Length: 158
Image (cartoon, rainbow, N blue to C red; front, side):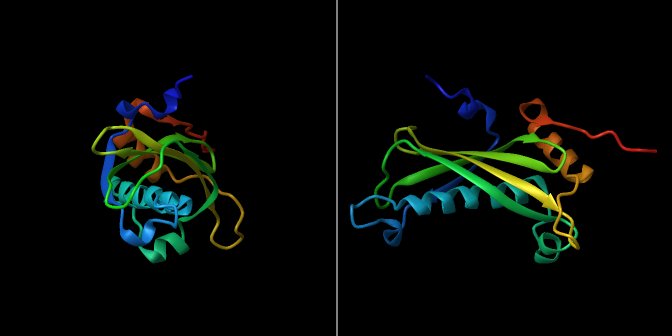
């Protein structure tokens, strides 16, 4: 069964990474935890690409965003010096959360080696309770993703 969620045509952001020697374990393949770092590289670059501020004051301040769940499916092992493409997108924005998806692809063959879904929640900086995802962020994502992202726009009280 094919996972249509990871159709690469849905991804508008890609960044290359190359496997370094210290990322390989005793079995000669990339350690499983390193895949999460590759997906994080993609997410951070995605935010920069769409114009979302990642300054430390914003991440810790008004726009406190936390990763609450990280799912990964390992498909193929990867060896030292392999060139990879990290594909990243935001697939859904709800009231207080958004979902980022990633696909890690071997540049040489085009094979998908891992997929990832990372769930993020916006928190109030004072209470650490969930708060609405900001409209400015929704607009940045909508401009970049278009109809490839399911964006819920909450009804604002007048």
